[in-house]
Image (cartoon, rainbow, N blue to C red; front, side, top):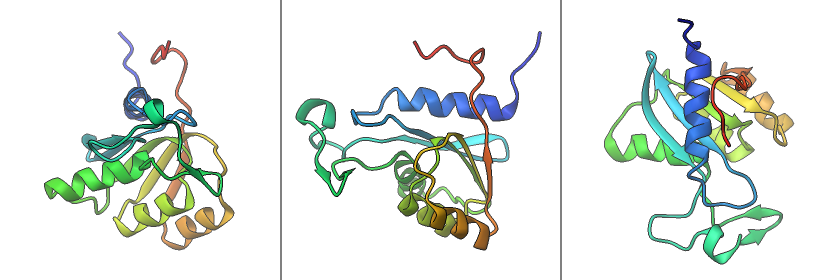
Length: 149
């Protein structure tokens, strides 16, 4: 029996998390991993108990949905809420992180960002990851790993 790689396993987890997204513009999932163990996961959606894009529509300001908390932020906030350290951890994200998430990941001590799809890869985010010595790798999810239909 052939097992999938760790990268494919964790990326598949992120794609599975994205299926819980409540934003209709883009579904994103993020999985934070340390020592080959999942320590948190998140998807993009509204605050707990708040209105969701799927119910009320996106609340767009300057071409961004401000109703939504990004998947990476939700995963980091889950760690903060439950006292789980993120220093030296890795994150697997379905899409390249936005500039704000990039800064949060750096400040949280994330050392490697794996992403499956390019999405408005901001040049300053790339520069910041480089300055902070954060390794960034594109790891596309292999079609044979998970059927998202």
